[in-house]
Length: 473
Image 1 (cartoon, one colour):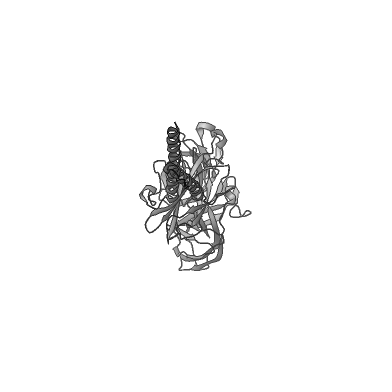
Image 2: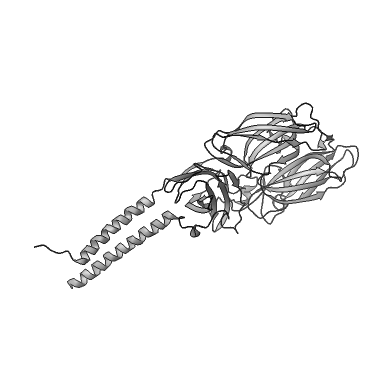
């Protein structure tokens, strides 16, 4: 006699099988490659860019044509680079160019030209650069060495070199009239008249007023009234200019010195800032080399640097590895930071792959990260939910609904754009919101479906047990 299985038992068996399948599917869906992290010091995180060719040619009586070839010898794509050309001299010829003495760089410069368009280097790529330039008028005497510095918007320097001007090229010079004997930053609210070295990065609160204290010596033979023009940049000279201004110092008799102090603006974003000062006379002619000071706004912050993609293409179902450096609040290592009890934030990292042609997100990975002192290097595999011939990536660090830092790298045109996001901007405008994209969040949707099926299976099992108990009674 063949015993028929009741419909409820059949339903229970199917529910059990469905539950087992759901659990297996959930396990497979969640099996992404692990995220690799490495604790580092910021000075150790440098992508190697070498200067493989260096030449400068005369291009006229007062024009030159520097030529340089850069090579990326690392395994990573480097984007968002700018080149600066400067006319400089050494403060102390017994030291090298990059030495720092009493908080000031040994390289003193009187003129600078910054490339407006960023460029990039793919792994093992060599890039020739040429800069035909007309040398400026009224250059301060002694600044006859041409420098090139390659850096990004975040202030990371990748390469530097310098040349002597070629024979036959003459500079129209003007004598130096003012000597900046000493320069320091002040935070009177906490430290009174105690000054910090100019490039050390003094820490301030948003309610405090940073100041610059200058000791100025008139080395000319006539009275001068210096005018000081300043520009304030986010992190570096290649960063976004956030403020500018000008002040007039008192008239200084010939051969005498004064101490002059003036305030600097306080930007809104928690970040490190560089103020670049130029000293001119009443006609606008330079009377001293430019000077720089750095100051840091205290608060919860983070900085993402050097985003690199493992591939410029993406295939549905395959991983694209995104590598970047992540650093904590900018005042973490600044002088006086210990007086502010700076807390290293726990942040959520969001990595979005997007297709450059459609501007649509094709893969997302979100995870928490605790920032140790010094920072992290992270390598994040992201599974692409669609194909892309020109893939880009957006990396964000978020905390309590605010974006602390963001970086967008478009691997197709090799341009990185520093968005300088504030808490009022949720995500980079170049990336479409995941809810607007049918293929975005593919794996998260799959997990939702899997767990929904699992819930249905459990509910069916409960119904079966209830009906069975009632039938027996």
